[in-house]
Every structure is written in C-alpha cells, then in structure tokens.
Amino acid sequence: MQRWRGVESAPSGWGRCVVTIGVFDGVHRGHQKTIGRTVERARAAGVPAVVLTFDPHPLEVLRPGSHPPMLTGPRLKAELLEGLGVDVMCVLPFTQPFSTLTPDEFVHEVLVERLHTSAVVVGENFRYGHKGAGDVAALAAAGRRFGFTVEGAPLQGSDETTWSSTYVRSCVDAGDIGGAADALGRDHRIDGVIVRGDQRGRQIGYPTANLEPMPWSAVPADGIYAGRLVRTNGERRPAAISIGTNPTFAGRERRVEAYVVDAEPGLDLYGEHVGITFAARLRETLRFATVEPLVEQMGRDVERTRAVLAGHPNG
Image (cartoon, rainbow, N blue to C red):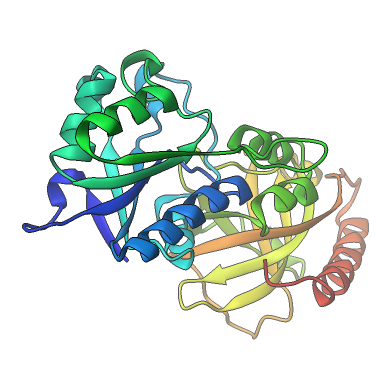
C-alpha cells in the first residue's frame, strides 16, 4: 500500500481511482464495510482504491483542546487499511486554511484536479467542506458535473447500537473491552514506547513493561486486564496489564504497565515501540495494606490471564 502525505504526493500520470473519505479512527466494523465497498468498486473498475483521511483530527483545529481520544495511531491505521485491500492511504493535513474550503472547492481541488476520481463511497451521514456544508446529496450533484459517481453507504451496527468511533471510545473509557471489541471486530489496542518506571515490579517478582502511550491514546478505565504485548516484529506475548496509579504504593501518576507472562529472564523492552491489546477486564484496581497480599493477588491475575487468553483469539 502506498502512503501519501497530501494529494500533492500523487505521482505524475496518476489516472482514475475510487475514493472514500473520513477520519476512520478505529477502523471499526462500520468503517470496514464502507472501505470494503470502496475496494470492491475499485477492483471491478480496474483502478486503485484510495482512502483519504486527516491529520490532526479535525476537531483539534476547529476547536483547539477538544481532540478526542484516538483509537488507532497512524501506524496501526495503515496496517488495518492495508489488510482491507486499500491501495493508497492519503493523509490530508487538516489546517485552518483547509477547513475553510467550500464543498465545491474541496471537490474540485482534491477529488477532481488531483485524484481524477471516478467514484466516491462515503457513509450516508458524511459531511464535508466549511462548517460541514456539504452532504452526500451535494457530493452526488458535484459528481454529475465532474464525471464521478457517489455511493452513500448505510450505517452499520448491532440491534442495540450503531457502530461509531464515539461509541467505541465510550466503551473503552468505561473499561467495557468486550463492547469495544464487538464494534471494532478485534481487541482494542494502544501503542507507545516502553520507558523506565519505578522498577517495583522487579523487586516483588513481577517485572512490568511501563508503556508511555502515544498522545491522545484511548486508554481504558483503571483496572487489571488480560491482553497481549505486540512487538514490531509481529511477536505477540500474553500479558497481565495494570492501568492506574499504583495505590498500594501511594502512586499519583496514571500508568499502563504490562507483565509479560512466562517471559524469558533478561527480556529487555526498554525503548521499544510496542502495542498492547486488551482481551478482558479482570478486576478493578485495589489498594492493599501491605505488599504480600498484592503479590498473592498478582499471582491470581496472571493465572486468570492465562485462562482468558487460552480461549481468546489473537485480536
């Protein structure tokens, strides 16, 4: 899959393509339907399938300080899109001048002049242009003028809810890992770098990898989780994960720490970029009066982690 920064990165001689447009944070099951339809139409036409997405999140530009928690960082989003058969991921820098483009200007400058779009597939609630003035009907009218077709894909969901990035974020924030996974079609994951912590875990027999998440990451609610630590080489290690402030040690800084189950002695992850996936929430964070009952509970958490992951796919 090609990765472009801005439509100016389109190679000379670029021909026609089928495009879908959106932030696609989480690439949840609703997104997957829309993107899958884009790929299907592109294959039928013998042209590339292009995903137009944005960086930073538009809300951060339109209302500074309102950036929502992010479900997928750039690297994971690219991996997911490639897995869906996308040929090009084009990241449009969302700037203040860009936000003032009228719907007609966006269509002409991005879809027509640069991408030579033959078809566009978007969600039926899609909005574009300054203050979201354009909708699917307006896009279809522009398509009739400029020679591309438009398909509004229906929203997707279960009997109880419509899948959306906002819904998934609410599940993650509440620690409802199962609800998030149902909408995502996989386990929720956060990415970051392993940094040095207080090394208390090493002293009590449970050395943990202290994750510094990427900015704006959607970190689950405080608690103990079963999941996996995913390394850049694709290796996936079972892990018992703690999120919270370590109340037994009067901690104040909220941390994400993963104990790699059955790790070989001397496993060194410092400085490594990793992902942590969440398969199940085991319990809430507890404060223990002494270290001994904490260690006993950690032993039980590790055994529960083994049991959960034994019957859980590599989400």
